[in-house]
Length: 341
Image (cartoon, rainbow, N blue to C red; front, top):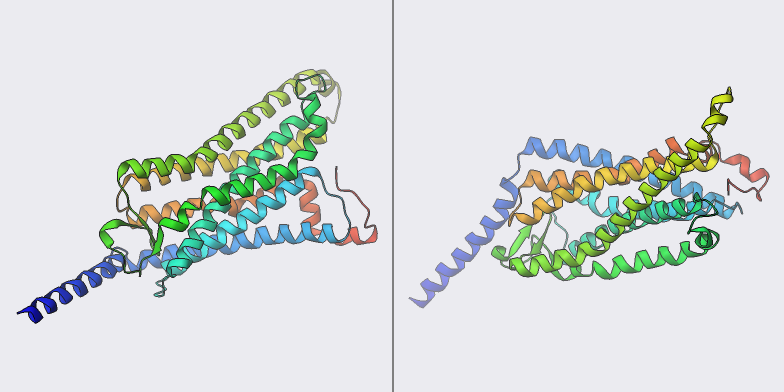
């Protein structure tokens, strides 16, 4: 009798385990997997090639002794964060969509989620820092930012280190609550995200964790919008002041500061659009105990849009970057050149 009961329990446990993995596999259509796999693969490869090419040229200039613009240091960190986000999100999503049967281990899932969140947070932080730095740079000498304008360059490196450290610490929570789908933990206490899962708590604790993770993002996002609005206002006042000159000049040309600011505004606008859309999907995923496969994949796809588009936006809007990317070798003739301070 005891043996039969034990056998029955074992069968039930085995059936539950099979149901667990069967539910993970049968909630997707094979044709949908192939299409999504191709999309994720294309997005990841294009994004990585674009970011790595920009990073290569920045490193090339560094080792040839070229002095770059102050904002280029911020862009280098943004490129690294973009690459980290694409590597830790795009590649696993591609493998999962193509039906790769070997899911990451618990440690692998923890690191993938953790590093992706760090990359995503640093991307937000560097966009914020870039906007604030440019807003201070183009402000008038008589403004209240005049003193900060002189010292702004000295604050870039400490601000970048603070951004990395902050997101490395805040996102430690993912190392504690993320696990692999092939782990032996109770499925009733998990929320599945394709190849990995998170531990589901009560609504109060989940809300508390969400608020903790959102504080740096909300602060940076608000600062980003303020800096962008300030740049638009400064450009508008500048245009009003030189309107007569533009009217009398047959071939009016905007100043380098105005062109740089417009480039940053295009980059920031692209980021704000994708980040806002991504946040909406993240909220929807957080609301559902077991989010749908399509919702999870669309969210992952949107998460990768800005890291993929960023290097191409920079090349299109910044003539110096385009020049460096497509014709860099002229610099070696004079290694002490300075690129548009």
